[in-house]
Image 1 (cartoon, rainbow, N blue to C red):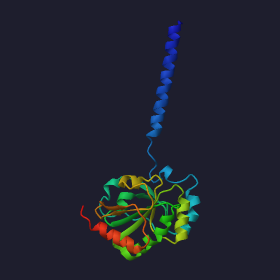
Image 2: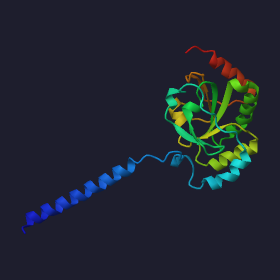
Image 3: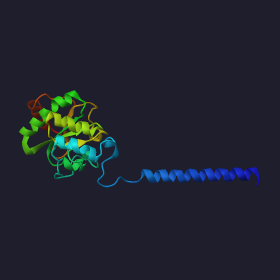
Image 4: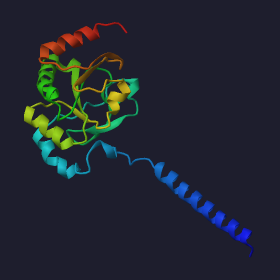
Length: 214
């Protein structure tokens, strides 16, 4: 066998190996996530359902909203995240459809967020069923977020979103806390990258934004 033939065979072997490796990689990347499973990067590896049982019991949060009428915010279509209260998978757009929503973005380590959350709960108490306040915890440490809510005595439906998918889709500035006000038709009435001290302040901000055209 000549040297040129040996080189040709070696080159062909390497080429075939690379093609097989690439095919396996593409096959692995294209495998869809299992239905009903939470996105892997939204919680720490330590935050298994078993490990979250105690913090969930301590927080005693209400379930996330059931799907409302209509498709919900267009920007949030296709985003599925975990409901911190019970671990259920939430279709975010559908859960926020057909109602006025005050969406509060926060993290357990954020001091101004902790100051604001009780005001959000008081605002929800005053607003009644026509408006819902949903908080979005933007850190992988879901257990710490649940314990923070338990310490504050705040019981609001909470979505776990460590990758900031909601904030990115709605073009919220990278600050916390931040609040997004959504109209019942799913359009954004206002984005407020600031903190609130009282329920009265929140009520005024919501009224002003809901009164704006477009």
